[in-house]
Image (cartoon, rainbow, N blue to C red; front, side, top):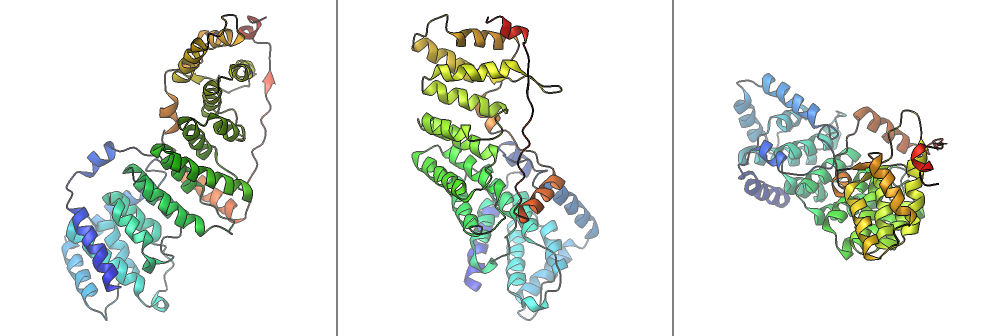
Length: 387
């Protein structure tokens, strides 16, 4: 235990020496889940409350906690650790003290712990707030912490922090550890799956494609519900790795076919395959789709530009129906200026209450099937122009 503590503290002091302002760090990084989705807003509000409660006695509290950590017979209580997690600042002495308290609290006689407070998510939010990805990863992988971080939201916060710092290899290592804990359980870390697929997409190598495909095959074999966002990252990765035939198989297996990312990925994959005839029904379906209170089905500009360029290179005859469909899409303002890449990596916003409800459903091994939406077909004027 002593060796592990020393290792953590050596890591912490080096990390905490970085004096960049937190806001500057946040503004310069990419995110996949919003901070509100990770519970950071509530955590930061709690920090303000703790600062007010400890007004003028913060340093006294730190001194007392240092004495407790240095005295073998003394104990760290739940409220002590909770307070330090909300008072810690990004400076070496605070992070060193926090690590000591975490370690001591974790190795105390469990029979003397009567509280039900779950520290994992709060610890990960603290690391996220302090912008300490290496410390968070070290703590997560440390065997002495055992089940300390075994919560879905703890996995998600850790992976988001690693993603923000482009630590994609480490994300795969974390996912492998997580996956092994859920081989036979009903609970499956869906958000962790999305994040590791995003990491594979960002790395964009043959190795990461094979890694992601192995995950896909394993989940299919087990009959798991694979979220659309994870599928889109894998599809885009396959296209980038010149495997459009694999991309087609993946994207056509996604149930939610009416999303713009699914449509655009299908078009992009078929464009790479020079299968332009397969794109005709996709465009026709979008132009025919008519459902009350639903927006028009659109496409991203870079997807259409790539398609037009490929058709020109293949010398497709000018009276081919696809040209007319593209013209109809343009004339009806169905081409968006945003790019597919930007859309794929856009932030995911989650409602905390819905997340809790979804986790409860997963605990019951219940994966609700999406109700098939009825689609009304109509003789829209834009399509009559093709006749």
